Image 1 (cartoon, rainbow, N blue to C red):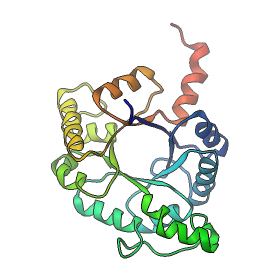
Image 2 (cartoon, rainbow, N blue to C red; image 1 turned 30 degrees about the vertical axis):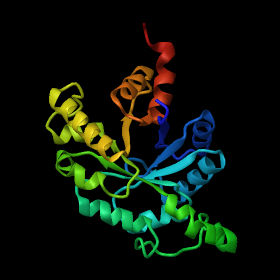
Image 3 (cartoon, helix red, strand yellow; image 1 turned 180 degrees about the vertical axis):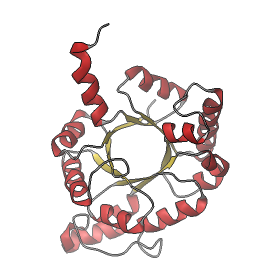
Image 4 (tube, rainbow, N blue to C red; image 1 turned 60 degrees about the vertical axis):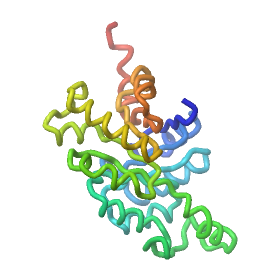
Length: 242
């Protein structure tokens, strides 16, 4: 699949792990602020390491707070993943927070993203780079399924399913083989194809068979595992019987 984009997930505030991931070949690395202890200062350092190592630093927000969006973008994040998006209004607010006026409401600041105020870097960021910030929404509830057309028609790059939260909201937590869950996945995929946006899935376990399966199902924006699961799985291998 020629347009396949593979990244991974960073939940531990380790610059070394971030650098390893970036050099490993992942197109992007998501710094998770929602389900981790990573603070804004650590996020800035991780963004810098990932960026300088040649990968694209994404940040999963802890919510939809415009102040947090502004801070991580000023730190140099190249992409935003907004969690628990359920309505058109929520998307519109996140989009506005990511764009400078007149396209949005993002405040003008001078930080790493703007070259610390150096004139050429600042103007290039404001006029060009800021308009290329990737924006993905995370679908994690059955309520979101009712607004797919309205949400996917917005100025976003794509979506990512949060499988655990989505299944929990459907009353079948973790049951990814349930026919209702599979039907929901397929419905989302079909609507996304209509709007030609990236179709995302987070494979939590470091399982290559799952990676191949999700590709065959039509997903083309795949987060492969997460730092602590990769570490845990490999650490246990010498003690795991075949």
